[in-house]
Every structure is written in C-alpha cells, then in structure tokens.
Image (cartoon, rainbow over all chains, first blue to last red; front, side, top):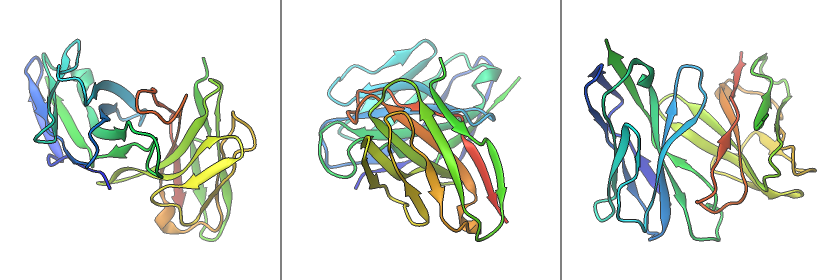
Length: 119
Length: 114
C-alpha cells in the first residue's frame, strides 16, 4: 500500500520570503503522479501543482515549484515570494498511474501542513 | 460551470439517525469518489465508482453506503450515524481513474453527530 508522510504539522514564513514544505512517500510502483493541494479556511481543495513520476524535470507553477527526488521518494513544495493569501493547509497526495487493483484512481493524502504567513 | 456540487454544506445529526449526502457533477465524469477529512489524518477514501451501476469500497467504508444509478449522481448514505462519523466529507470526480485525469472536488459537507 502507498503511504504519504508530511512531517511538518505547522510551518510559518514572513511575507515575501521563501518556504519549503516537505513530503515523503512510499510505493512499489514506478509510474505515478504526485500532487500538492491547498486548502484555505473555506475547506475548498485547490490543486497547486502536480508532478508526473516519469518526468525528471521539476514542475513549476508561477511562485510554486517542487523538488522531486524519485530515488529518495521525496516531493517538497517551495513557495517563493510568499503572500498572505498563501496561508492555508497544504496536502501532498499520490495517485497510481498503472491501471488495475482496488487502489487505482485513489488519491492517498499526507496528514497536511498548516502554513502561516506573517506580514 | 457547476462542477461538483455537494449538499448539504452543514448538518447536525443525532446518534442513530440516517441521512444522505448528495453529490452531483455536470462534467460527464465516469469516476466519482467520497473522502472524509479528519484532523491530523488528511483525506481518506470511503467509496468510489467507476461508472453508473458500479461501486466499490475504499479504505474506510464501514457505516456508509453508496449507489450510482446515473453518471451524474453519487450519494453517500450514513445508515446509523455515530459520533465517530463527525467529519468533513468531500465528493470528487474525474474523467477516468488514470492519474493524469484532473480530480475536481466539491466544496465539502460538514457533518456533526451528537
């Protein structure tokens, strides 16, 4: 079974600074996708960025980028130039790419990291 | 652009009562699923469906039933509510099960069982 671990329950950053959220995962699969979701106080789940495991290049979306280390099974999220609107719970998630089995299609989530942004 | 619509947004139940959380999507997605979110545990899969008439259990299915009579609707039924079912529930859909398919989430349903 796949597991996703976020070891930082809470993180804080000053506005305009950079912060990195950590995520590790465990899987025996070779083909999968990894995601970072943002959940503001409204509880809406917002996709921030995704990474395909077979792509070596790290994904970027504006101020958000990832450091994907497949061999180490690590997938960290870097937020540059942090803004007050970045304050939220952040979830790392995993989804298999290979068809078959009861876990196909399922998103496996980490425990979440609460990010506070100080003005 | 309705996307994934969940109702109700908030509900308080008494222990032993039953209720149905409704979920509807207008994107003709085959894959639909229900998750629950509890503090410190992220979201966990309750049940999922790969198409009309086909449902299966996720990792925490006990106490819940689902059905999928149409492509659009995927209701979640609590048979006899227990305080342990106090949680935030999310319905999600995607075109298919493949990981490359974007998952769309509803806005969540807050359920309190007293």
